[in-house]
Amino acid sequence: MIYTLTLNPSIDYVVHMDAFISGITNRTAAEEYYVGGKGINVSCILSRLGHTSTALGFTAGFTGREIENVLRQWGIHTDFVRLKEGISRINVKVKAECESEINAQGPPVSREEWEQLLQKTDNAVNGDTFVLAGSIPPTVVRNAYECFLQRLHNRNVRVVVDAAGQLLMDCLAYRPFLIKPNRQELSELFGTTLIDLSDIQRCALTLRQKGARNVLVSLGAEGAVLFAENGKVYHSGVVPGKAKNTVGAGDSMVAGFLSGYEQQEDYAYALKWGTACANATAFSSGLAEKQTIWEMFGRL
Picture (cartoon, rainbow, N blue to C red):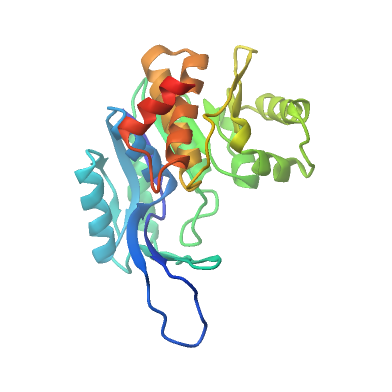
């Protein structure tokens, strides 16, 4: 089983308008909404690739119920802790002459509810995969990922961490199977500008020395590079074309990589699937559909 963790899922309400003018009533030209959260995105792409996963985290109120309903419609198992107070987030994305966002904080989490979520990691058994993705909301403890990693340690569970900054660094001592920083996150992590592949390799190998077994660095239009625990470096390019959307592309890469690895346990094959999924989402208005993913895989 693959478990994905989204501590603070949301409904992203996207509104399109020709122009946004402060202080007056604005009218939209179009709108849509998406269920959001990095772990949820990973589960969504896995489902479209034919893999079963269980989504964990917190939900609350009527928005939380809608998040769970949508995930079940996508064929994703849900095992969220239902919070007693508040509602799951509604984030507003305004797309006009420029893009603006209003991101909510999220509902409060009690100590008892936090312990309930931690206990769900005990369902993970030998050979399972556990994905920790995204930032930690202010409503939970700041060492949340470490709490999960401590419970999973020495259980032969593959752990994937897709996080940034100190949050990522604090996870390395637990030897996660995979981490996936992008170029900007890697640059910020080491406080330097990464000019070429040798700079990226130096930083990635430092992360491996600190405990990460495999380091997957997404490079946007330049593809991705994997620094694997077998000592090899794998590089994948991109499918030519103009990207329509970058939201969720990194999460799609994680899902595709896991899908490929589940199939063959071959790093080159896993990277190709990860790149195909990232490209497919980049060329879509939302998360990629199965047909688009297969098309991208055939063009790489």
